[in-house]
Image (cartoon, rainbow, N blue to C red; front, side, top):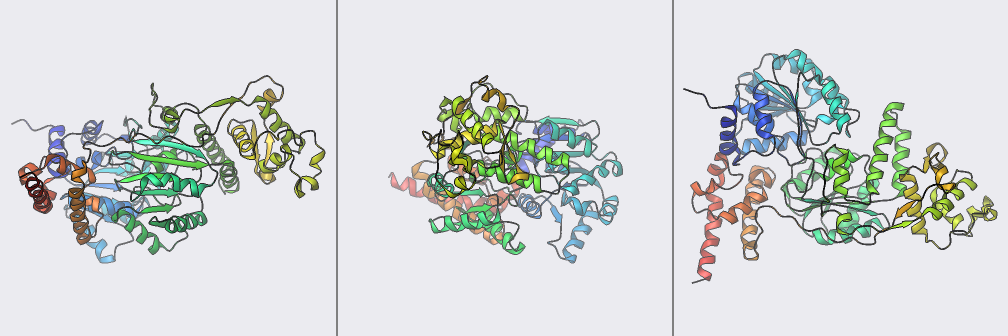
Length: 610
């Protein structure tokens, strides 16, 4: 009798265990590749279904799949979600007692585990490797694989030793997965992990449901409030560059009527864990955080990610904004930045203990992000181009598409700015040079006798804010450099010669005061007004069940699953199987409870029409 193919068996698991009808994108091909014991590299955007690419092959084969995961919180979330779907999964990490770890090891050696999650530093301990030697391992999945590359936005030393897996466990397929990697990072991953004849799968990086918007920083907290006005009672993340900014922004939001929690590396680990748990389990909370928060956050209903400061690279920006809208519904990626962000990040690079080559890499990344921030055409086209993905038509869902920026001939003003930098000795920051241009009568100008310069007062027709825009764009475009060995003073570059000599016309972008709100893209079903009470009741049941099980609500069911229940209105358990995201284990555990709520509302609705 002919055996069913990998694809047929994988589809059966997808439907029976996870409750989904069909694979997306390259998922089926990736699963087949892993089942054929071939190494692979998978690039798939956040929310694209990367975990299915190794979870299903592990379930298809005898033995245990080992997942290398960088964060304890990520392991715990994924294991909870798998267990809720009836999968025998576990993790090994420092949050467990010695007895709990011993129980996991015994289940592994006895062949009961389908999936085991472990951190790279734990995996590379000789005791762990010897434990795996004595177990039946069917695959290694290396999640967040960009961490192995110096070009990746979150390089981690512990990942460098993972190349040993190919030598020690020959014939066991390895699958490296990440949501963010340009061409250079991809090559680094392949080489450092020593993947053998790997299949490379690159799915579109586009997240069409996310609206990208960038504003110039004026009064950042008030700008944030204006943005949040359309996100009342929604979950979101606000990223800040410093711990101090995290604390002050969190306090400001709470005093402004929002529910906000801080998260940064300076907090006690227990406090961080408590705040993260609340963010995952409660609705309508805002997490204000440094980049210490976020990798692997699986919360599907994050409606916005806001940046109060410039991130370090396009890869970091893409990864952080990718935490919004994992459920496919409309989400916003909003950012404010200013010249001071550039100065501060550049100083951090120069003052770091990294070697010269790593600093060069970090400077190049920052320059690329700055260039993207100042684009005058569709942001999505430029963002995808960075990852090697062409896009022909403007997206219609970014600030530039919604409100195209105005440009103006700033050649004369650029010449004034560059001349003022030169005549003040190429040792001062933008604020002082602007004072000179605008003819300010202050102590610093008089102390350096700059009131006698030929550039003093020649730029009075431009406001301080507009001059800051000119200087920021001159830095971004490479006509000025920030000298960090001289307290952040501005210096001319070779490229500035053509401007000063009048050989080049320079068009600058006009700062927009406001941006039109993005169109709201929705998932499969638009919630009707009369169904809002039903949605509230389904969410309340989900909340109670999650509380009883000590898991985040989305582990019970995603919002899109609840919406599908409302759309399909199942009357029986058999019909409930057709709901997206309802597998057999969840159907058995929760099906009757959710049917009761649906049927109660059905009786109310039918009674209203009698």
